[in-house]
Amino acid sequence: MTAPTITIDTLVAAPPETAWRTYVEPEHITQWNFASDDWCCPAASNELRPGGHYVARMEAKDGSMGFDFEATYETVTPGEGFVMTMPDGRKMETRFSPEGTGTRVTTTFEAESENSAEMQRAGWQAILDNYKAHVASL
Image 1 (spheres, rainbow, N blue to C red):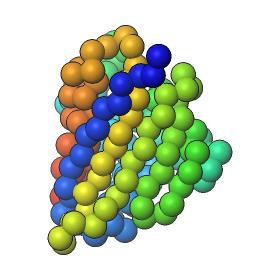
Image 2 (cartoon, rainbow, N blue to C red):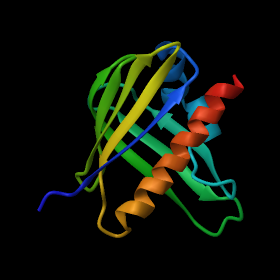
Image 3 (tube, rainbow, N blue to C red):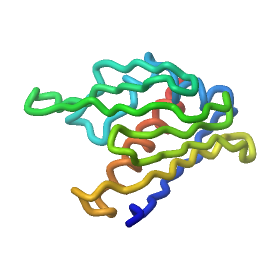
Image 4 (cartoon, rainbow, N blue to C red):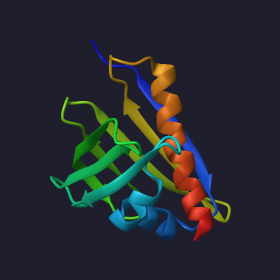
């Protein structure tokens, strides 16, 4: 059985080069990669190349829980997008497309089976909304 796919997106007020850089550089990832204000991303590493490893530490600010979000790059086209595989085999793809004076960032991922698709969509969209706010703050 194939996992359902979920798509989220946002339009950031930045050219593709800036949108890309703030999405993939660890010093930026730690500023936006969390779904709510009671969580944080204290560390991230990113080997941006096919076969490279991505890790973002996500933790509740009160220390009650945390996990490493990990994936391996399948393809990378700088400034345009990438495809990753998560440890459980699920795929995700993120694309950066010029739109007017900004950039449309779209992520499509295979849903996991532990949480509802609606919950996953809301969580991933909240992270992408934090990313948009971070780009706007630069």
